[in-house]
Image 1: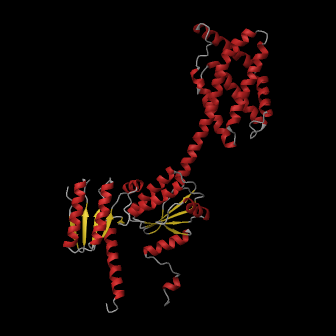
Image 2: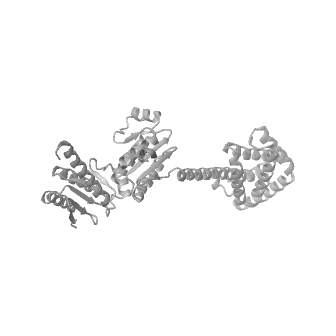
Image 3: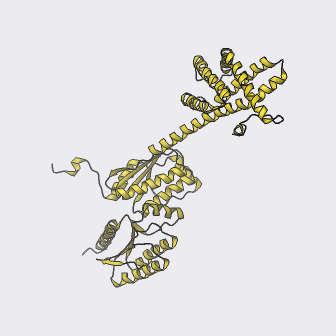
Amino acid sequence: MEVPILKQGHYLIASIQSALTDADLSQLREALIERVGKYRSRGVIVDVTALDVMDSFAVRTLRDIAHMARLRGAETVIVGIQPEVAFAMVQLGLTLKGVSTALDLEEGLAFLDRQARERSERVQGRNPRG
Amino acid sequence: MAAKGKDSPAPAQLDPQATLESTAMLLRELVAHLRQNRTQLREEWARRITRAQLLTAMTEEEIFAEATSVYDNYVEALETGTFEALQAYARNLSERIIPRGVETHEVVGIVLLLRDVLARSLFGKYHEDFDKLNRILDAYEPAANRIANTVAVGFVQERERIIRQQQEAIRELSTPVLQVRERLLILPIIGVIDPQRARQLTEQLLRAIRTNRAKVVVIDITGVAAMDSNVANHLVQTVEASRLLGATVIVTGLSPEIAQTLVTIGVDLSEMATVGDLQGGIEEAERLLGYKVLPLEEVTPKA
């Protein structure tokens, strides 16, 4: 099943609705990375609320998405990991190191907004005229 | 447990049917003897208990009273061959004496003493007829063994039940997840952390993060006396899992001993935010959440 990718302002939102095959995941990764450039997005949110299992391939794909999107200039947040899934993941050692996470979509958006603000403040700090 | 297989106390060499009958007869004779000498045997038993310094938590009168009822139950179990009443009594007795600090060896000791006292009285009665004594003992020994077994098992079971109950109570008492501010949770951990409890703690915390929409969690381990690498790894896992839900964890209250152990055994806690005490942890959490706590006059300087 293809994952719908929505464009919302400067952000892309991919909301996973059901269990995905490895092929679906790879397809999602390619689609996201391509669209980050196309829409000049500054942030990507992947919502995994509907997933009650997360295997190593899924975790690796999510991590790859985050790292690739960063190279293309967008920050990625994974949102909506279920408590049981989180517990199972750490027990298996799949901890998404270096990837931002948030409780749900709302939190994810707030996180990206805050990041954007901090970035612009940094830029203004460097440029006294701004 | 082994005594359970010896339901029918039959010496091997005799015709089983006849043996069963004669066993019943002998037991009846035995019970009659024990009934007749009830007072004397009971007193002898109580004396032996005191002399052996068993049941020191109880007064002499109490020992005598308990001895009387144990004796009667014992004789009844010998007579009827059923152990339900004795089992119930053993449980009831255990319930009464366990809180007073009576130990397992004492309970087993007094039952064995009673067995000894009764056997001696049988020796006394039948010492002229060796053959009869032999047969009486054949009937008596298995039944007596089973009684001793029943009482001891009853006591141990009661003890285990109490221990289980207390473990359960401790477990329920000791894992509160508290919200101190909007989006800030505190998890004070007190006592020993075993793998089962660590798992339960983590699950509870993760659920609480979700329902309270927490952003920061302060785990306070001031009340944890010792920590090994297993527990430390559990803690790291809890921190990781919380991060996956989007919450930052701050660990506070690591005692000097724990800090030394963790560094000595080489547990890597560099990923973990730690603050000295609970107060500092809450202040750090407030900073992360964008709160600033000020005295009132500093907030309204114009007034």
